[in-house]
Amino acid sequence: MYLTKKQEAILRGEEGWAKKKCLEILVGLGEIYGADHLIPITSTQISGVSYKTLGEYGLQWVESLAPAKAAVPSTLNPAGMDLSLWSEMGIPEDFAEKQMRVIRAYESLGITPLCSCTPYLSGMAPRFGEHVAWSESSAVCYINSYLGARTNREGGPSALASALTGYTANYGLHLDENRKPNVVVEVGAKLSGLSDYSALGYYLGKILQQGVPYLKGLTFFGSDEAKALSAAAAASGGIALFHAEGFTPEARSDLSGLERLHVDDVVLKGVYGELSTVSSGEVDLVAIGCPHTSINELRAAAALVKGKKVAPSTKLWLFTSLTTKALAERLGIISKIEEAGGKVYTDCCMIVAPLERMGFKRIVVNSAKAALYAPTASKVDVVFTTLEDCIDIALKGRVS
Ligand code: F3S
Image 1 (cartoon, protein in one colour):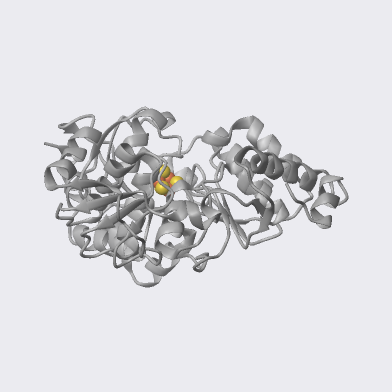
Image 2 (cartoon, protein in one colour; image 1 turned 135 degrees about the vertical axis):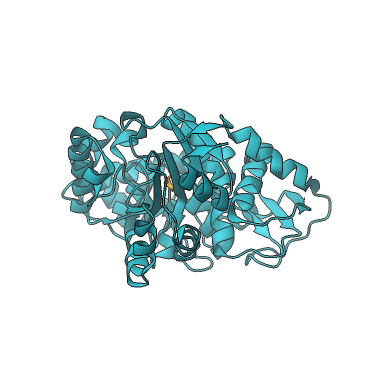
């Protein structure tokens, strides 16, 4: 692989041990994937933040990199708790102590502790054609597809290596030839809410795995719809890029000769049953915000709970970013949710929080990604349904 004089100097350790190790990671990845050189990137987004997923060795690795500093603007994936309200959430103290060490370790590297899987809603939105190194799979799929930025699905360590050096290896979705669609998806199903887009994403990921689908037939596809579809498609398979005709910036390809897949209402509705592990009974937690909610989603939830009360035996938690919550507070949205007995937490989510240690046994979500991950990640039963049903269940305290 061709390296510049500066990159060779970093590899010789002239800019410190941490940058040398990080560049070794990137060169190693580049050699595995056949990259010809390293390219500069303009931002990173780093996963492996919750102590639940990072663990002790991961924490020690991040701490060992000081005093190196990030070379480009960098943010973090959700942590395992709201960094301010963790005690109110019922997070165990020993977990909270480790989690704060993780955050301090990243901060000491010059990484911004905006712990969110939707930093593109908080001012970290790369432009069309911009090369970046992001690792949250839902955000990777969103920025590749909806914004036309360029990133591979980085792991936490490789995104951190890119943060500290400012480079990534030039392969995969950084190259034009790998961004072309290889299957046409005709969406015949009627999509009526964000959970339907999430169900569609789940189905596409499951069937196509690593493909680059070209979606035809969508009649509306805003940022929230793209966010929901991206998260599920990247979770059930390895989809990191799709094109949506009429909506995404690179959806202009020659489609002749490509295989076709049709998605109808029956397929879509089947996803709800497939992902739900129970169909009746009491519910501990209704969790909205996978990926982190936008201001529109918070507003919709507030309208649904207006003048009502969450059942005493059930919690209604919504997860969002620090910046979206601040805006929602100013707009009076948070107080409406709290008056009904709900809570809005930042910095974390229902999958990377230690739910299994907090007594939750059955949760309800409107995200196919959360429904797919929760039984394994948090050892809970799950119901996947629409936002309207989620709120209704929170008010009744049970699925019937
Ligand atoms: Fe985000 Fe957590 Fe879902 S990181 S995409 S809310 S699993």
